[in-house]
Image (cartoon, rainbow, N blue to C red; front, top):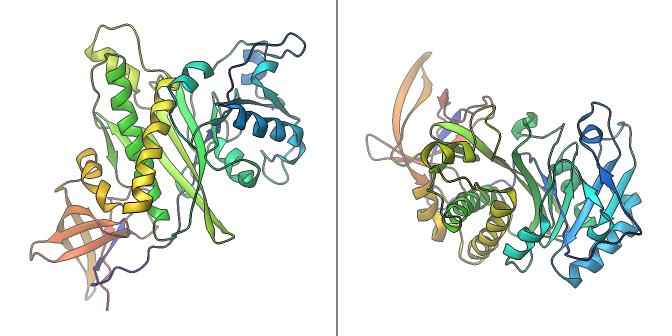
Length: 380
């Protein structure tokens, strides 16, 4: 989107609590002995055919506490919503881990994920589905049906959501998940996407180190994209609603893990620089993400974003980046050069012009690219 430019007042105004759309996925896991009394098998044809199959949600949990919640969700599955109003509503099957006999295509390995997970809230209830319209819809439409911190993951989604109602491409091999969180301070809600993106980059670093793989330089492109070697490999998207004095936030991540299209993937980049056969798995990154996010989110809530800003700016693409904004003056368009210096307290870009004056850059909502066709709006 183009950016508007305004002088920063002495006391920053409260940021609007608007957030971008999300692509998501949900999964619950509990390691339990498999039961032969109730079995269910999913085949690739049932997942990938054009016709809409019945939706299957598998609930994985971390402990007995989440197991009770999973059983409660299963008992009231009729209340779950996956589709838009007016769409044909197929049957929703909710299964516990013990009720799955085999899954032919594709699979999520819940046991190593839960073994690596070390959180108090996030990711402990995980909903996995082989095929969904949108993982964002699962968590956002059923926000009050799930405990805060619930996550959803899918192998394939056919109506993925992106920013500004754009469709998010979801090819096979893409890590797609969403999760829920709550906040009370609306001024901090727009900054959540920065915490999510930072947790993704930290998770990738940790996962590479744990597997003895070379580090890959995944960078944040403000405000919510992830880039590797100049190509987009992921996106972070969030939506929020306000109810009972709290902001209900649905956050989602799409990350090219094994899919080389439409750009490139993390594992493709790793294979280019090493002969090691093992690669990053969805389970590795997902567990590392929630481990990092929970810690970063706690710091953010209690100490503010400024404590994390240095780490964020070391990870993004924009330190000292030169940008040109356009301002219409007396029927003429004037180009004004500014240099990006960081983020403002409200989460927008902090920029300085050649006269050492500071400005806040913000999107005007008219363009898909935040850094094209920038415009400037002065404050009175």
